[in-house]
Image (cartoon, rainbow, N blue to C red; front, side, top):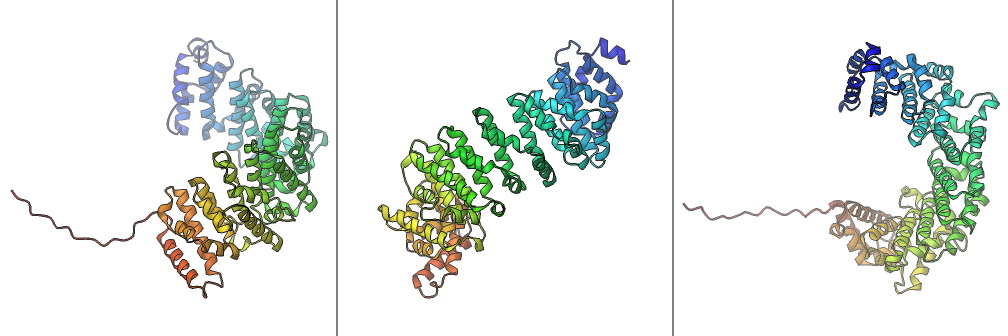
Length: 529
């Protein structure tokens, strides 16, 4: 039956396999058994390997087998067909190679509680080197599938032993591979290192101890190919997002290299922008300040400061990115304090841009600066963490009053009101900024000195979008909370009236709700026939 079917009439297999692959519901084990009773797995594999000249057969069979192996019963058959997986990983067909990679993933998921058996099978059939070949030489889909299965393998100690064998010469496999392949393959190997780094702190520690992060350092240091460097910076951005990355990141030269990119006038703007965003992401985490010395931090911050000073009005996109990066740094207390330290604090760029109305040309810059100032002033931090050290607090107050004195607004209250009179995006950022700054008594008094500001933040009809209503409401609550904690509330009748108005607005909630209206009787004339 198998010989007659596979060699003479594959049409029936093609039709049934297509139905199986495209079945809209969940395939249970009974459906898989029924399908395999009609078309045994060896017959399907044989039809795939003999490359019959039937249009669509290969794609249909690979899709069918992929779905089959994802079922519990199908996955249980994989250990019996490891030679097929081994051959499939070396196939000329990219579709077959992708299927083979995904089949190994199914094997690992099926044997998730028996990782030593899965690792033994992978080692016995020499699967890992074949997966690496798929990673560097396969097409995009094959490379992605290979990366996924290697990352899955790294979740178990037995799997990590395959990837990072104890023998020192074996541990050099990834470094050797990266040095021998194309630039695309090299980027893929580095991407794999980042994926493995994210698996666990244990895996990250192994990667660091084997100096595998040197891949990324070397590529950043030898920034000859802009596309490759940009790809590596994207990987660093991903690395910076990993929870346990800060400790290991701080032990490398990556921060210094990123600072060099920002300070190098010959480097393209897109690389500078990505470098600034990576620094922003890293320094937004408070824990990193326990690993990096102050001199290094000041060097990193000064590189962004220098870049902002050199930017012209035509460099709006890069300027917005730099302000956004500073906003990320300001999320943490040490970061915010660092930005507001010294006689010419880096945060001055943020404060100047936040109140600099340049029309449509400067909209994005002002928006980025307002959100950054909201972060620096503590809008996202807990109530006890909003206020910074005395130097930082004096600088933020001084700079905002300085900006007010330079234009017709004259006072911070005038600046705040000018922001709230702009479009919805700017207003939303303005609400965030006020919510953070109002924890300072000087800012609270400025807010309360402008009745129009109080009217706007207490009026639910002033915003029409959900996010705008919620930002206005949160701002109203922040002002009320700061006012309740103020010693001046009990002695100033005007502040008491403002407090009552804020309290009433809070009770109404964030959304537009009509005040309760008493039911009115309706008088109707009698119907006449």
